[in-house]
Image 1 (cartoon, rainbow, N blue to C red):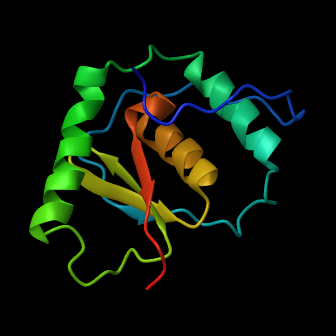
Image 2: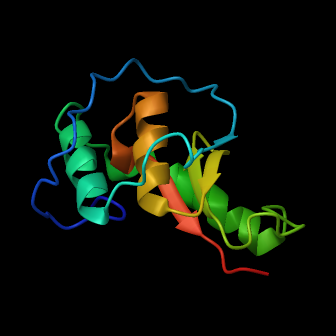
Length: 131
């Protein structure tokens, strides 16, 4: 079972995705900067995610489950974001740490997967209601 699968949509005609590098498990959290390039359409994001997915083996549930457990346990015991600084944001989790935030979950998934050199489904992406 894979987490947060996105349905197939037609290619939006954007440039192709460059090959990915080896994973970087010690990456620090960064926010994506939506102002550096024109905003893609949903279809363009999904097309680029599909292209990136084809370059890497999909993760197993056993690889993704620790991230979900870490998130849910932290939320249950009040240690994950006790100041609610992620309110109104999507959060990317990898190797049991927050590696990025953004207001657009597709942009966050694509940018972080590229940055970390991992299959897009390897990231846990969740969002939090605004405060």
